[in-house]
Amino acid sequence: ALQNTDVPVPRMYHLCEDRDVVGSMFYIMEFCQGRIFWDAAIPEVDNAQRTAMYEEMNRVLAALHGVDLEAVGLTDYGKPGSYFERQLGRWSKQYRASEINHIQAMEDLMEWLEKNKPADDGQVSLVHGDYRLDNMMWHPTEPRVIAVLDWELSTLGHPLADLAYQCMQLRMPPEGGNLSGLQGKDREALGIPTEQEYVKAYCERRGIDHIDHWEFYLAFSFFRLAAIAQGVAKRAQEGNASSKKAGWAAQVVEPLASMAMQIVREGA
Image (tube, rainbow, N blue to C red):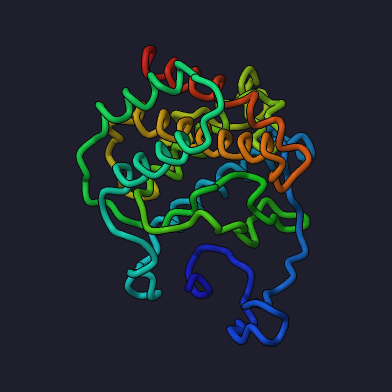
């Protein structure tokens, strides 16, 4: 669907729906020769490239949210409208199902989110769901995204959910594993825009005057990630985790919820 849009994706060659061939449906896509970066500070490049890479991520995100759903045939890719209401219900249920210990910060966060849910403003776009630096394949030498990867959480939803999710990640500690952030880093010295500058650039690209309820969108992003981590922790406890490193998840639920509540108390 995205092949002829401004969103860079691998070329898809074939989808086989015949399960008898290899035992399940499968697809074949282009091999993209490029680079993956895991550290949000991108120490592998210089300041000029870092600035250009953050600009590129911003451009691609705006392009993603600007996709004409009808033109590309994605109007039935998810339920339109009431995105945050549905997401809150879904992830609250998931959290309760995988709860191990009582975490007061999560209780406070869920209560605040429910009470401060903004009215549905009618915005609907394709959302990636996990838009971050390491889910992009970068050109071998240029600060250019050649393929956005890992679309498992994509759906139709509210575009600001993706923007807030990426900004949430950048607020996290540098040693956050796959979600390494920029907390405590001197962004100016690194050539990386501030959150305000990044959001402003996105808004300019999409013709948005201002964003209301930014604290809610950020807090929701922390909540969703905490709920996902709680699920991983529960599976690890039961011996069903897909990775031997899943034990980390139990350690991050409370800090994520606490960071969200700090935003709620102090503002974004």
